[in-house]
Image (cartoon, rainbow, N blue to C red):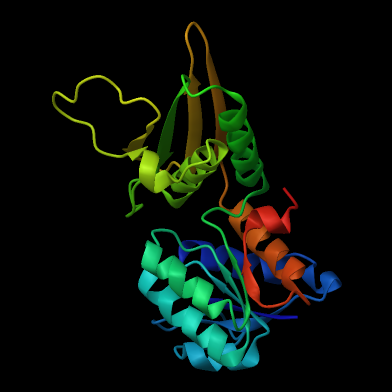
Amino acid sequence: MKIGVVGCNGRVGKLIIDELLSEDWDAHNLILAGGSAREAVDNGGQYFTTDSEEALFKVSDVIIDFTLPEGTRNHAKLAAEHKKTLIVGTTGLTQDDEFLLKQAAEKTTIVYAANMSVGVNLLLALVEQAAARLDPEWDIEIFESHHKYKVDAPSGTALAIGRAAAAGRNNSLENLADYDRHGKIGVREKGKIGFSVARGGDIVGEHTAFFFGEGERLELTHKSTNRKLYAKGALRAALWSAEKPAGLYSMRDVLDL
């Protein structure tokens, strides 16, 4: 299976390239087809690079995408056109962007997850279960912290946690989310899911789902300490996607959670 990495100069793109070059992924029949980037890549001739994403799609079986929403929109179209599997870890996607992925997934296999770590996806399952089992009087709040260079807020992972909590309460995040609190806001509205965001330093990513009851609280926390886990998760998704029919899948599908 030939892996192409769009945005191979990016923070996670570089890690995926390094992972494929340094680890024994060829034992799993995963080999690096190449990478694409807007700027020239100096890799000492180790692998094929191009500024043409379409050229990369043509030589790859699976494309891994940790770029920006505008890039992912184009990659979804190319994946559908060339019938190539697409693994998407881009964050900050809008509902329209996610709908575009669903449309593309009618023609090819797409795995989309705001976070590809095993721990975070187990956290999502636990949050959904907790929200379902605790009565509605328990208040749900989601706290997240990231490095100062992250451009979207709340993080895609925080939103995924919110969706899991809302699903546990047989509702949608769109109905329950409370993103904006400042000034005299009054008492907390029952059933809302609140979000708090911190940006600073070099924090890789920390997320906590709080369930506040009377006289007790439950905290479910995940802390990322190394971005390599995203690269490993993406390659795990690529392996899993082999022979899968067209459709839109998540990491919870990959991990059978």
